[in-house]
Length: 230
Image (cartoon, rainbow, N blue to C red; front, top):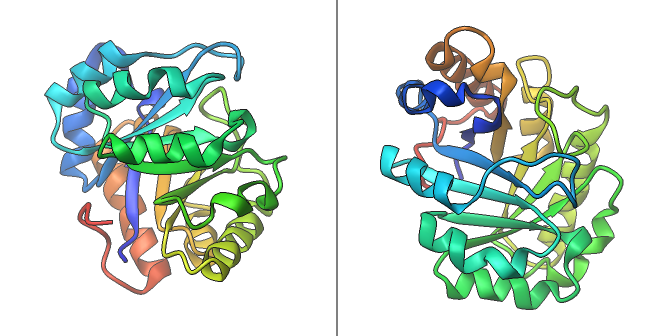
């Protein structure tokens, strides 16, 4: 499986969002990571299905929609209909995780489960065989531009061991503070999907930044960088 780059639009200039998306696409982005926040589960509010629908019209890139919300089940259909290709939900808010993940798959979308930095890997043990990907947060969610939490790569390794033990080939995504200083650590630990926000959109040239990070990921993996075929 190739290493995929998923620029996080949370760090993009929303006044120029269409241009920013085109820029990272030219730089080789495989997905767009879209953070949805409700001001309850995390201390911030971002965007909803109408914005996802607008983004869908602006790009053919896979839309990786990360629901940082308290009641994700209520909104799965709305985000799927808006154009989300992948939908991830937090283990911390799921009373019936297998049912929620099944509902996402029934909508024809890839289903992911997310764990926060303080959440043990054991929290997803029961659904390890039921996910298409696991998203490991390497910052506390809610705001962009945070610093990568040290040793987050150890959690990636632990997730990979759990998935392998369950006979799962699910991908591992990492999100939070990913930049040129730690991208190799993440890849070496087993991350297949790399979310980067400020390291792409706040360096002055999103296209060049995306291309640079992809090259670093490819070098770390010792294999070709992905083309969206995860």
